[in-house]
Image (cartoon, rainbow, N blue to C red; front, side, top):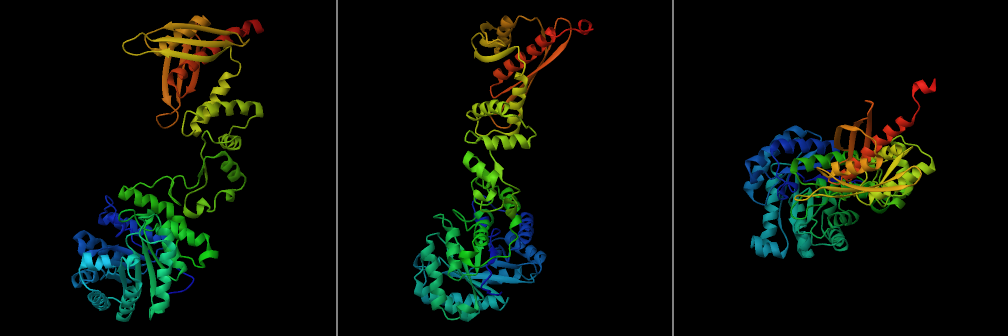
Length: 517
């Protein structure tokens, strides 16, 4: 593999390290599906699994190796144990570009507490593992586990030894997520300056996110000379996860002035990849996750919305289309301004004069104070309510209900007529809606029969706006439809009834055809 200074290779370990996230296990069919998406992304290396760990992992590596062809390197993990390496080589037999990834711990913690061997023994095992792997494949990657906590001089010694044994890629992992960008960058720089033969191999970084610095540490490694980044879709991995591919790739792409390198990744496939991996593993992506989160390109602040509507780049450094996210999202909330509301209404086909808009804006703010988010259906309901208020004989000013079990449902309503006169009355009924309708009837005093009553949710969520549709029949047999929308279904019912009665009253006031003649 080339070590061109202007390119960073992307090594995806979603199928191996990513699967180590608790609850994120995948079967062979699911791994094959993800591997196809990784090819659409254009990753350079797919770490398909750890063949000796289980028959299922062996089969996954074998099938992915056979299917990928020349499109990417297929890598299999092993420990510095002959049986591991042999099993990895067997799984990779069908690969056109196989790589064995073997290695051993290099920190004092790993040497003393886990492996219980000396430094000399560790070097001996590392060299032997690389030589054995090279007997099967030409491309061998060596990982110096827990390099982030290793003594630098010993790390240099180990890396120089395995390069001499035939390693083509040397992986410097921050296995426990212990490092910081300045420290990790200095570690990579130290390797570049002190290890004989380092210029002949690809230096790789594999960072974990225990302190939330996996992406930053990986980028620091690139600035210091690393030319391969090991990462996963959505940052899956042990404990707090690994470097997220979408984050590190977009960081390199957006800041060539800082890094001077790029990848060959098709970034427009990121959202698709994220959703696929999330769906298969059941590991949900947090809404504010960089690049692929649901809120990554959503704007709810009025100031931000105004800026984005005028020029997207005022608050977005990435074009959503570049990562497959479609477009920016204007989220209407209580913090949204007039510009965002008018823009969304226009998109829905509602173009109105300032006076009419101000009425909608006032109703919008009242609704937004009660809901986390106002949806398109909410806006349509608000516009419908505003239209129904035009030419009202009576306007529903307020409604108050007491009900429960035990108890007698009672309702008090206030209606205001077209002359501004207020009427307040109360009644009881078989239920809260019946009590409200009886109270309204006491004020309006227009005989009618309620023939139909229906309720439906026009938006999503527990705080959804409910729309009530009713039909009433007048004494002369004519039917009038009324509609009302509100987040309180009792209020919606009252609005719908008043709307139907207003239609009835207006029709009663209009001259008949005979009178017109």
